[in-house]
Length: 573
Image (cartoon, rainbow, N blue to C red; front, side):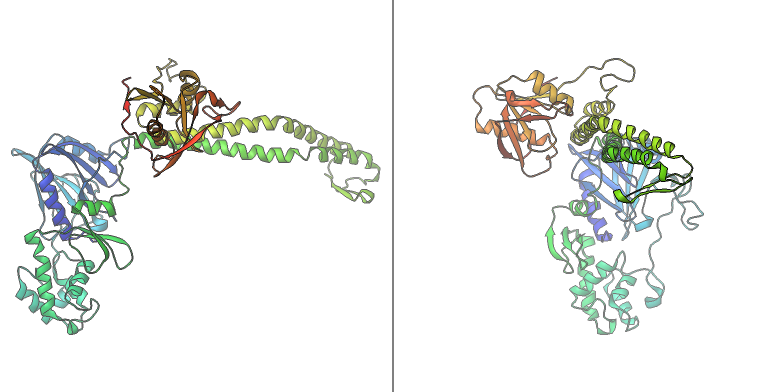
């Protein structure tokens, strides 16, 4: 990803326009190397993402609200909250030609600076006090790791040193901007070894340039990026370089997403000739977020949801293992009669056995039976009879155990789906309690907790009840619904039982709106279209011995709808 000096410049412009002067209201950690600040400015709330990820380091405005990725904030997040929450974001400045951004925060009498260094595996986010001392960082860099530039609390912050030009080709000195110093730039290119690769030469002289920018400049000049300086139109290269670096003065950004030479999606602050299928984006932040920020946490319940889901999946794995073991036991029990016959044959033909025999051969029956030489024939037969009795008992007992185990698997599969669909902490707590059948009705203190009950909605006089877990599904369908109400459920999918109590004869539009809710509260929530069955409540039957919420029904018709809440309004609890 070419998060170069141009991308950083475009991002810094967007951050200044959106967030400078605003108040930092909240600080969270969507992922381990990432910090997100919510800044209220200009009557709007903006999320500023700062990441020091080794591969996806970046800065940008987020298009959606972000969520914390950890239940317990890190020490660095706690430090940022201490110094930054409630303070003003007073200035944003990019270090010249570098991928380093400074966010000055606080009041005139005491300001701190949050720095973001986008430098590959050396990327970092650092909080620096007004006297230049380091208060903390996402990545602490002790002296044993870097004697030149350690980053430790209490130490002095030293900015990344500017990259000198490639001394092998151009001699010692600073890198040269082809816009601000065009003649010096051209002279240095002309003095470089003639057989030097054009791309390598450009990367050794341009400030803030990487391979992508150097190759783009060569192509715009009509030169072969891999060709030698000897064959390149150097004057044209200088002109193109001046045109491109003029963007740092004009700020006429053209953010775009494109397909690079390796077939991967990429972004740039301009429309490149190097890429294919270029698409302009409204902001640089959107381009960066689209290609680098997909995995950032946006689920406000993510931490709790993951904890409940992990526990559910462990229980589900154990239940599936029990089903597998019971099936194996059931197959083994089919051998019960064979085991008994072997014991009877040993007793019947024991007169043929020599002392300590290891095998009983019965040619006329085309049978052979292995024996334990340490046991007498009667002891061997008794051992087989004991095994027969165990297999016989298992054959009688296992089917019931297997049915119960399969019911438990179904129950846990339903819980797993409802955990993914849950929209509140209360729903997740209910589902977590239901994992333990013996305690799901009581809290850990032994007191009965007040049930919230199914969620209810209304729309133009029509009423909906929606079950958000297996218990609520049964309550909706078999306790609260009237026999002539309409019952809706996503076809062949785990999801909510939805009951529609229409104000009058239901029109097709009302049924579709209710079906969209049933699709939304099912595992098909993210699909473009879902089949939803509709029937009367009186035609729904509970499956005898099945998991809670599992039913059969008849007389249904099927509607194909897009999941959504339409204009249903939730009732006040």
